[in-house]
Length: 77
Image (cartoon, rainbow, N blue to C red):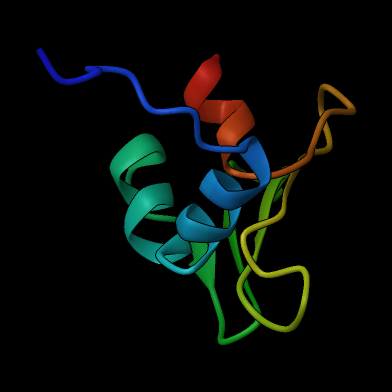
């Protein structure tokens, strides 16, 4: 029987999620309250932020909780 488990480094998963940041973030959080080419924001004051461009594309930050990293983190939560 073939091995059912694959061992993919978390960094590779994070890069794959970042390449589809718009789709993943909307699936997890719903439509953003504001968006631009560079960022999506959720919440009354945009306290949840997702970077949409550059080398940090797919990085998020929750200003209310002081947490942020890659899209892997909110999926894990």
